[in-house]
Length: 322
Ligand SMILES: [Zn+2]
Ligand SMILES: [Zn+2]
Image (cartoon, rainbow, N blue to C red; front, side, top):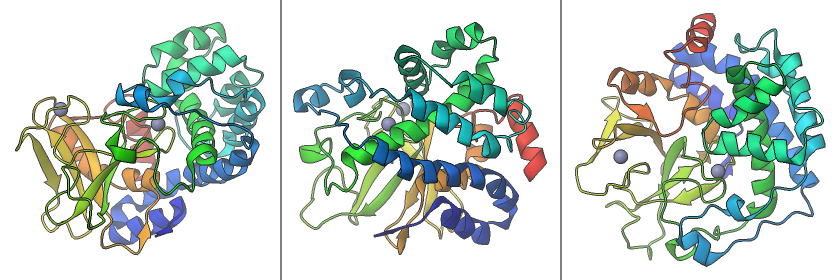
Protein backbone atom coordinates (compact mmCIF):
# COMPACT_ATOMS: atom_id res chain seq x y z
CA UNK A 1 0.00 0.00 0.00
CA UNK A 2 1.20 3.47 -0.87
CA UNK A 3 2.28 5.60 2.10
CA UNK A 4 1.28 9.19 2.69
CA UNK A 5 3.71 11.74 4.05
CA UNK A 6 2.79 13.73 7.16
CA UNK A 7 1.94 16.71 4.96
CA UNK A 8 -0.35 14.67 2.67
CA UNK A 9 -2.11 13.22 5.71
CA UNK A 10 -2.59 16.69 7.19
CA UNK A 11 -3.99 17.94 3.87
CA UNK A 12 -6.50 15.09 3.78
CA UNK A 13 -7.61 15.75 7.35
CA UNK A 14 -7.85 19.51 6.75
CA UNK A 15 -10.19 18.87 3.81
CA UNK A 16 -12.42 16.71 6.00
CA UNK A 17 -12.18 18.91 9.10
CA UNK A 18 -11.43 22.52 8.22
CA UNK A 19 -11.75 23.47 11.90
CA UNK A 20 -8.51 21.60 12.61
CA UNK A 21 -6.56 23.05 9.72
CA UNK A 22 -4.96 25.90 11.72
CA UNK A 23 -3.70 23.46 14.30
CA UNK A 24 -2.42 21.02 11.67
CA UNK A 25 -0.66 23.80 9.80
CA UNK A 26 1.17 24.67 13.00
CA UNK A 27 2.39 21.12 13.57
CA UNK A 28 3.10 20.27 9.96
CA UNK A 29 6.64 21.76 9.75
CA UNK A 30 7.68 19.76 12.83
CA UNK A 31 6.50 16.42 11.47
CA UNK A 32 7.84 17.14 8.00
CA UNK A 33 11.29 17.93 9.36
CA UNK A 34 11.26 14.81 11.54
CA UNK A 35 10.34 12.70 8.51
CA UNK A 36 13.11 14.23 6.44
CA UNK A 37 15.68 13.66 9.20
CA UNK A 38 14.61 10.04 9.70
CA UNK A 39 15.32 9.25 6.08
CA UNK A 40 18.69 10.91 6.25
CA UNK A 41 19.74 9.36 9.57
CA UNK A 42 18.66 5.81 8.70
CA UNK A 43 21.73 5.74 6.43
CA UNK A 44 23.89 6.84 9.37
CA UNK A 45 22.90 3.68 11.20
CA UNK A 46 23.87 1.52 8.22
CA UNK A 47 26.23 -0.69 10.19
CA UNK A 48 23.93 -1.09 13.22
CA UNK A 49 21.89 -4.16 14.09
CA UNK A 50 19.48 -4.86 16.92
CA UNK A 51 19.41 -8.48 18.02
CA UNK A 52 16.07 -10.11 18.72
CA UNK A 53 15.59 -13.00 21.10
CA UNK A 54 12.36 -14.96 20.78
CA UNK A 55 12.45 -16.13 24.41
CA UNK A 56 12.94 -12.60 25.75
CA UNK A 57 10.15 -11.28 23.52
CA UNK A 58 7.83 -14.00 24.83
CA UNK A 59 8.65 -12.74 28.32
CA UNK A 60 7.66 -9.20 27.28
CA UNK A 61 11.16 -7.69 27.28
CA UNK A 62 11.49 -4.86 24.71
CA UNK A 63 14.39 -5.18 22.27
CA UNK A 64 16.17 -2.01 23.42
CA UNK A 65 16.39 -3.39 26.96
CA UNK A 66 18.91 -5.95 25.72
CA UNK A 67 20.57 -3.83 23.03
CA UNK A 68 22.75 -0.84 23.75
CA UNK A 69 21.76 1.97 21.38
CA UNK A 70 24.57 2.95 19.01
CA UNK A 71 26.78 5.88 19.89
CA UNK A 72 24.94 8.75 18.24
CA UNK A 73 25.91 11.94 20.07
CA UNK A 74 26.69 13.85 16.86
CA UNK A 75 23.34 12.84 15.33
CA UNK A 76 21.61 13.84 18.55
CA UNK A 77 23.26 17.27 18.44
CA UNK A 78 22.55 17.74 14.74
CA UNK A 79 18.92 16.73 15.11
CA UNK A 80 18.39 19.11 18.04
CA UNK A 81 19.89 21.94 16.03
CA UNK A 82 17.88 21.29 12.85
CA UNK A 83 14.65 21.15 14.89
CA UNK A 84 15.18 24.65 16.35
CA UNK A 85 13.20 26.37 13.60
CA UNK A 86 10.13 24.11 13.47
CA UNK A 87 10.00 23.72 17.27
CA UNK A 88 10.11 27.49 17.71
CA UNK A 89 6.54 27.36 16.38
CA UNK A 90 5.41 25.90 19.71
CA UNK A 91 4.78 28.91 21.95
CA UNK A 92 6.22 27.17 25.02
CA UNK A 93 9.53 26.68 23.21
CA UNK A 94 9.49 29.81 21.08
CA UNK A 95 12.32 31.79 22.68
CA UNK A 96 14.08 28.83 24.18
CA UNK A 97 14.60 26.46 21.28
CA UNK A 98 18.18 27.63 20.62
CA UNK A 99 19.18 27.16 24.25
CA UNK A 100 17.43 23.81 24.49
CA UNK A 101 19.15 22.57 21.33
CA UNK A 102 22.48 23.58 22.88
CA UNK A 103 21.76 21.28 25.84
CA UNK A 104 21.76 18.32 23.47
CA UNK A 105 25.15 19.08 21.95
CA UNK A 106 28.13 16.97 23.06
CA UNK A 107 26.14 14.56 25.20
CA UNK A 108 27.79 11.52 26.71
CA UNK A 109 26.49 8.10 25.70
CA UNK A 110 25.16 7.65 29.25
CA UNK A 111 23.21 10.92 29.03
CA UNK A 112 21.67 9.85 25.73
CA UNK A 113 20.65 6.49 27.18
CA UNK A 114 18.95 8.24 30.12
CA UNK A 115 17.09 10.63 27.82
CA UNK A 116 15.98 7.80 25.53
CA UNK A 117 14.80 5.81 28.54
CA UNK A 118 12.95 8.81 29.99
CA UNK A 119 11.08 9.35 26.71
CA UNK A 120 10.36 5.66 26.04
CA UNK A 121 9.13 5.01 29.55
CA UNK A 122 7.21 8.29 29.59
CA UNK A 123 8.96 9.12 32.85
CA UNK A 124 10.17 12.71 32.64
CA UNK A 125 11.64 12.55 36.15
CA UNK A 126 14.53 10.63 34.56
CA UNK A 127 15.42 13.84 32.72
CA UNK A 128 15.17 16.02 35.83
CA UNK A 129 18.75 15.41 36.93
CA UNK A 130 19.99 16.27 33.44
CA UNK A 131 17.87 19.43 33.19
CA UNK A 132 18.90 20.60 36.66
CA UNK A 133 22.55 20.02 35.89
CA UNK A 134 22.18 22.19 32.77
CA UNK A 135 20.06 24.73 34.61
CA UNK A 136 17.12 24.11 32.27
CA UNK A 137 13.41 23.68 32.82
CA UNK A 138 12.57 19.94 33.07
CA UNK A 139 9.23 20.24 31.21
CA UNK A 140 10.75 22.13 28.28
CA UNK A 141 13.76 19.81 28.21
CA UNK A 142 11.49 16.76 28.15
CA UNK A 143 9.34 18.21 25.37
CA UNK A 144 12.34 19.13 23.22
CA UNK A 145 14.15 15.88 24.00
CA UNK A 146 11.09 13.86 22.97
CA UNK A 147 11.16 15.25 19.43
CA UNK A 148 14.86 14.45 19.14
CA UNK A 149 14.55 10.91 20.57
CA UNK A 150 11.66 10.19 18.18
CA UNK A 151 13.86 10.98 15.19
CA UNK A 152 16.84 8.98 16.47
CA UNK A 153 14.83 5.86 17.38
CA UNK A 154 12.63 5.95 14.27
CA UNK A 155 15.77 6.14 12.10
CA UNK A 156 17.29 3.21 13.95
CA UNK A 157 14.14 1.08 13.70
CA UNK A 158 13.73 1.97 10.03
CA UNK A 159 17.29 0.86 9.32
CA UNK A 160 17.10 -2.36 11.38
CA UNK A 161 13.58 -3.55 10.55
CA UNK A 162 12.28 -1.45 7.62
CA UNK A 163 11.27 -3.37 4.53
CA UNK A 164 10.75 -6.70 6.29
CA UNK A 165 7.52 -8.42 5.28
CA UNK A 166 6.87 -9.58 8.85
CA UNK A 167 8.42 -8.10 11.96
CA UNK A 168 10.20 -10.59 14.25
CA UNK A 169 7.84 -9.73 17.11
CA UNK A 170 4.77 -10.51 14.98
CA UNK A 171 5.99 -13.94 13.88
CA UNK A 172 3.72 -16.53 15.53
CA UNK A 173 2.27 -13.66 17.60
CA UNK A 174 5.27 -13.80 19.94
CA UNK A 175 4.71 -10.31 21.31
CA UNK A 176 1.61 -10.24 23.50
CA UNK A 177 2.12 -6.89 25.23
CA UNK A 178 0.32 -3.56 24.91
CA UNK A 179 3.65 -1.70 24.98
CA UNK A 180 6.15 -1.43 22.15
CA UNK A 181 8.30 -4.51 21.42
CA UNK A 182 11.24 -2.26 20.54
CA UNK A 183 11.35 0.64 23.01
CA UNK A 184 8.67 -0.27 25.57
CA UNK A 185 6.53 2.82 25.05
CA UNK A 186 2.73 2.61 25.03
CA UNK A 187 1.10 3.23 21.63
CA UNK A 188 -0.24 6.56 20.44
CA UNK A 189 -2.62 5.12 17.85
CA UNK A 190 -4.00 1.78 16.64
CA UNK A 191 -4.93 0.84 13.08
CA UNK A 192 -6.92 -1.86 11.36
CA UNK A 193 -6.03 -3.40 8.05
CA UNK A 194 -7.50 -6.21 6.04
CA UNK A 195 -6.45 -9.63 7.29
CA UNK A 196 -5.22 -12.40 5.05
CA UNK A 197 -7.82 -15.13 4.57
CA UNK A 198 -5.82 -17.76 6.42
CA UNK A 199 -5.44 -15.72 9.60
CA UNK A 200 -8.46 -16.96 11.48
CA UNK A 201 -7.51 -16.30 15.06
CA UNK A 202 -8.26 -14.05 17.99
CA UNK A 203 -6.29 -11.19 16.47
CA UNK A 204 -9.10 -10.71 13.98
CA UNK A 205 -12.42 -9.00 14.17
CA UNK A 206 -15.47 -10.59 12.61
CA UNK A 207 -15.35 -9.13 9.12
CA UNK A 208 -11.65 -9.76 8.80
CA UNK A 209 -9.84 -6.73 10.17
CA UNK A 210 -6.59 -7.07 12.01
CA UNK A 211 -5.49 -4.69 14.76
CA UNK A 212 -2.04 -3.15 15.04
CA UNK A 213 -0.67 -0.75 17.64
CA UNK A 214 1.74 2.01 16.63
CA UNK A 215 4.54 3.44 18.73
CA UNK A 216 4.80 7.21 18.43
CA UNK A 217 8.34 7.15 19.83
CA UNK A 218 10.25 4.61 17.70
CA UNK A 219 7.66 4.12 14.94
CA UNK A 220 7.32 0.34 15.39
CA UNK A 221 3.96 -1.37 14.75
CA UNK A 222 2.81 -4.63 16.28
CA UNK A 223 -0.26 -6.82 16.17
CA UNK A 224 -2.53 -6.84 19.17
CA UNK A 225 -5.70 -8.56 20.35
CA UNK A 226 -8.74 -6.61 19.22
CA UNK A 227 -10.71 -6.82 22.44
CA UNK A 228 -7.92 -6.35 24.97
CA UNK A 229 -6.81 -3.20 26.74
CA UNK A 230 -3.13 -2.43 25.99
CA UNK A 231 -2.69 -0.89 29.45
CA UNK A 232 -4.45 -3.12 32.01
CA UNK A 233 -4.71 -6.21 29.80
CA UNK A 234 -8.36 -6.89 30.51
CA UNK A 235 -9.90 -8.88 27.67
CA UNK A 236 -13.44 -9.66 28.71
CA UNK A 237 -16.21 -8.87 26.26
CA UNK A 238 -17.83 -5.45 26.48
CA UNK A 239 -14.93 -4.00 28.50
CA UNK A 240 -13.65 -2.01 25.53
CA UNK A 241 -16.03 0.70 24.34
CA UNK A 242 -15.83 2.76 21.20
CA UNK A 243 -16.18 6.52 20.98
CA UNK A 244 -16.80 7.86 17.48
CA UNK A 245 -18.78 10.42 15.51
CA UNK A 246 -22.27 9.28 14.59
CA UNK A 247 -21.67 8.30 10.97
CA UNK A 248 -17.96 7.56 11.44
CA UNK A 249 -17.48 7.66 7.69
CA UNK A 250 -13.71 8.12 7.94
CA UNK A 251 -13.14 5.07 10.14
CA UNK A 252 -11.79 7.18 13.00
CA UNK A 253 -12.65 6.29 16.59
CA UNK A 254 -11.26 5.96 20.11
CA UNK A 255 -11.21 2.62 21.89
CA UNK A 256 -11.50 3.10 25.62
CA UNK A 257 -11.27 0.70 28.52
CA UNK A 258 -14.08 0.69 31.08
CA UNK A 259 -11.71 -0.87 33.62
CA UNK A 260 -8.70 1.50 33.67
CA UNK A 261 -10.22 4.42 31.68
CA UNK A 262 -7.37 4.60 29.19
CA UNK A 263 -8.06 5.31 25.54
CA UNK A 264 -6.35 4.87 22.20
CA UNK A 265 -7.28 6.53 18.89
CA UNK A 266 -7.97 3.98 16.15
CA UNK A 267 -8.08 4.28 12.39
CA UNK A 268 -9.54 1.76 9.95
CA UNK A 269 -7.54 1.80 6.73
CA UNK A 270 -9.26 -1.15 5.01
CA UNK A 271 -11.02 1.10 2.51
CA UNK A 272 -8.20 3.57 2.05
CA UNK A 273 -5.98 3.79 -1.00
CA UNK A 274 -2.98 5.02 0.96
CA UNK A 275 -1.64 4.45 4.47
CA UNK A 276 -1.78 7.74 6.37
CA UNK A 277 1.23 8.97 8.31
CA UNK A 278 0.20 7.72 11.74
CA UNK A 279 1.80 10.55 13.71
CA UNK A 280 -0.15 13.09 11.65
CA UNK A 281 -3.30 10.97 11.79
CA UNK A 282 -3.18 10.83 15.59
CA UNK A 283 -2.97 14.63 15.85
CA UNK A 284 -5.89 14.86 13.43
CA UNK A 285 -8.08 13.01 15.90
CA UNK A 286 -7.71 15.60 18.62
CA UNK A 287 -11.43 16.39 18.42
CA UNK A 288 -12.14 12.88 19.77
CA UNK A 289 -9.42 13.22 22.40
CA UNK A 290 -11.08 16.36 23.70
CA UNK A 291 -14.33 14.40 24.17
CA UNK A 292 -12.36 11.64 25.91
CA UNK A 293 -10.75 14.19 28.19
CA UNK A 294 -14.18 15.55 29.14
CA UNK A 295 -15.16 11.99 30.04
CA UNK A 296 -12.09 11.90 32.35
CA UNK A 297 -10.37 9.28 30.22
CA UNK A 298 -6.60 9.38 29.76
CA UNK A 299 -4.38 8.52 26.79
CA UNK A 300 -2.26 5.37 26.90
CA UNK A 301 0.69 7.62 26.34
CA UNK A 302 0.90 11.37 26.62
CA UNK A 303 1.94 13.05 23.40
CA UNK A 304 2.87 16.66 22.77
CA UNK A 305 -0.56 17.51 21.40
CA UNK A 306 -2.51 16.02 24.30
CA UNK A 307 -0.10 16.18 27.24
CA UNK A 308 -0.72 19.82 27.88
CA UNK A 309 -4.40 19.97 27.02
CA UNK A 310 -5.40 21.12 30.46
CA UNK A 311 -2.02 22.32 31.63
CA UNK A 312 0.05 25.39 31.04
CA UNK A 313 1.36 25.03 27.53
CA UNK A 314 -1.51 23.57 25.59
CA UNK A 315 -4.07 26.39 25.92
CA UNK A 316 -1.43 28.74 24.51
CA UNK A 317 -0.87 26.48 21.51
CA UNK A 318 -4.56 25.86 21.07
CA UNK A 319 -5.69 29.48 21.16
CA UNK A 320 -2.80 30.59 18.99
CA UNK A 321 -3.58 28.30 16.14
CA UNK A 322 -7.28 27.48 16.21
ZN1 LIG B 1 8.65 2.03 20.32
ZN1 LIG C 1 -7.65 -1.04 30.66
